[in-house]
Image (cartoon, rainbow, N blue to C red; front, side, top):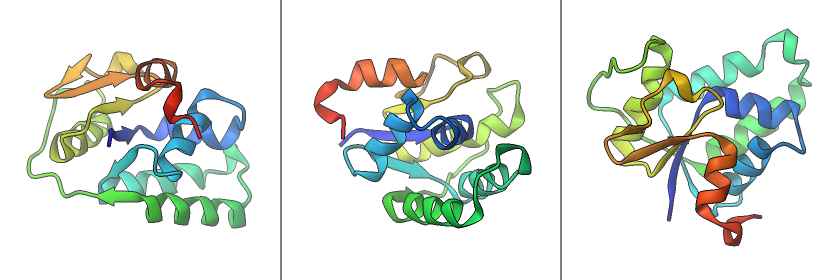
Length: 138
């Protein structure tokens, strides 16, 4: 199964744009069509960012969504720190991808990441959906 790490901006976009490509990517993960991989720091970041008032996500809906993500994700423990991204918070996603030997890291901000990290391709939601093929769409 394809292993994928989702940047927080993908998770946020999936929540505020229900018809967007990021939602399609998240739907693949929670439908177990792809294997979502996270680390404890990533889960913590998802929650803290999604709870920001500026996004206006209803708390009950957010709690359900976070529970769904946690239920369908595999949590890994990265074994080393990475400092390849100019944004230090983005390095947590590279660490997770490396620990999981993920196939893809999906982000809305590809310029903050190398094009490839070890065996992981760094792509946006559109590229991911194009590369994994229509057979995986929920």
